[in-house]
Length: 479
Ligand code: NAD
Image (cartoon, rainbow, N blue to C red; front, side):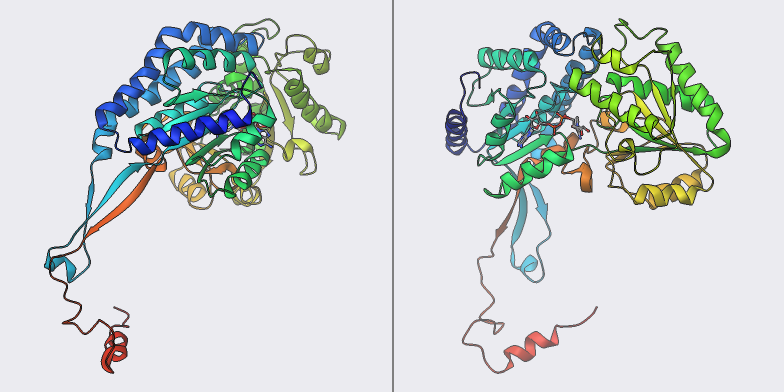
């Protein structure tokens, strides 16, 4: 547990909570200054961090990690720093009649909750910690971060840097394996953010329930893509191939199942593979291709594809490979795999792929697509490619997903000024923007009574006279 046991995490949390109770009011300037400390840490030490990620992924390119984890996190931190002032202002509300005429006022104040526990995941080992941290600090909280054990070098460097540069009573990092995460999720934080799978998300929520800790769950799912008859197929396939290659497909909002018009199957399959090959002329030892994070995850993706092939599905590969399994023990960079028309029984139709493979499902009628999407757990993302506005509106109105991008993938997740999060099995709660600030703030209603209390004159005080019930009943009206 790297010198930290669950007792010391509990003690750390207690210290943070005591520090919070001592100073519950955190001014805008203090919040901005706290966020700035994290920005400075990232700017000054990003090289060390991206080298650690490169090591953990056995070769994820530093340029990609700067774009994904450093710039992504910085953007969230800076957006919160630069926009939080108006979010903090007390929000005056209308008082009910007739108290409004008697001089009452009411407002909503946004209070920090206290100490926020943030459990991140390995695919974006900094972003899944620091993007929620931006909102937590913006809301005036303190935080303890628990990075994924799957990227241990990154966790170690992050812990060292926070220890060196940030007051542990403001933000601390604890490292360790699944048992540390489990103990962490059972602590009485004032709010808990978890990014990871739906299966573990349920365990986190169950553990948090014991202490009534509110949770934000950033989970995953099989994000569908609806390719319309009306789309520009060449551009659509280029954008899809690019999106699927992002982080080697190890992205929570990666496209997973593509629904396409039956007559376009051949063209779509060829265009996807061709575009992937154009981006990555070779896969093995190509630093532009993000490897699977480790053998276990590489084997998992290969198994999903091989099981479908063994069940009789057609599988096409962007690059010729003698054996996908051989890649597991080589550099873990997989070419794009297209699995065509698997049945619902195949594992690839049940599990999130989280790697460079796509399911292609041809359709004859768009209504079948909507029915099929609605027969599955609600996904984190939904994508529509096409120009038919009526069809787009119909798809949007009749499906549910965490977010949507139209004519591209992943983009909505990068919006700073809009909430990011799942629905149903893909999660609950949001971060990013003002909604992130609200998630980590307690919205406290403050009612200020008038000097004069009219309830006696209105006959509302006990002992109640005979007409009390009649007075109440007279107000039970429908308009
Ligand atoms: P995972 O759920 O297996 O693990 C996540 C973390 O949970 C691990 O770091 C681990 O320490 C912890 N954990 C495991 N068992 C636990 C337990 N019993 N109690 C408490 N904590 C426990 O997920 P993963 O493989 O790290 O990440 C992949 C998943 O994360 C995918 O489903 C992906 O879609 C999702 N994801 C979601 C987002 C998002 O923002 N919604 C972002 C990235 C990844």
